Amino acid sequence: MAKQIDSSKIERIRTAAVALISEQGISNCSVAAIAQRAGVSVGYLYRHYNGKEALINDMLEVALNIINEKISGLIEAGKSIDQVISGVVRYLFDIAEQDPEKFKFLIMLFNDFSIGISRRLTDRIRTIADDLLAIGRANGAIRPETTVEDLYMAVVGLPMQYLSLRYRGILQSPAPTSRGVDRIVRIAIGIVSENNQTK
Figure 1 (cartoon, rainbow, N blue to C red):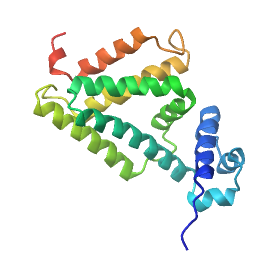
Figure 2 (cartoon, rainbow, N blue to C red):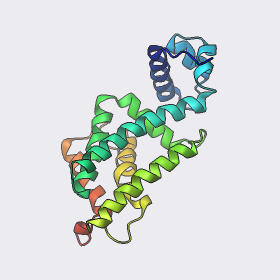
Figure 3 (tube, rainbow, N blue to C red):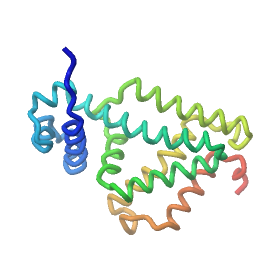
């Protein structure tokens, strides 16, 4: 018999996981605590996820799908590689401003090794980066020696680490200014762009 899915309960579970993990960290957050915060039974949560790792991988997949749609939309609109990088970096900063708790959760996922990321998701990240790299190489906008890792670092790693420093209070204020965002966009483009090689 197929599982019946109550989308409002699933969304409450995801929201509870974001809140608790942001507050307590991944390793300190239990399935029971997530279920209690979501207002569902532990059994209900386990009917849909076989544990915390499965729940987190599901949430990461949702986040990656949204980022992938943003990248695909910019590519389909015929944007240059610089415009794609700028669009994605600015999009990440927009998410961080609109929902800092969810963005903090994403940063924690990318920096905590206690939860494994499924092979399917790592393959998806690689495919997105490969596609973007191929477009950049085809139009001569990316330096020939640029790797998938360079591109990932420019588009995702740099803004996430910058925001992580701000969340930790290491940089002046928790919220970046528009000037700060512009600077991160320039640095990200400069990492991979052929046009910025000598700048």
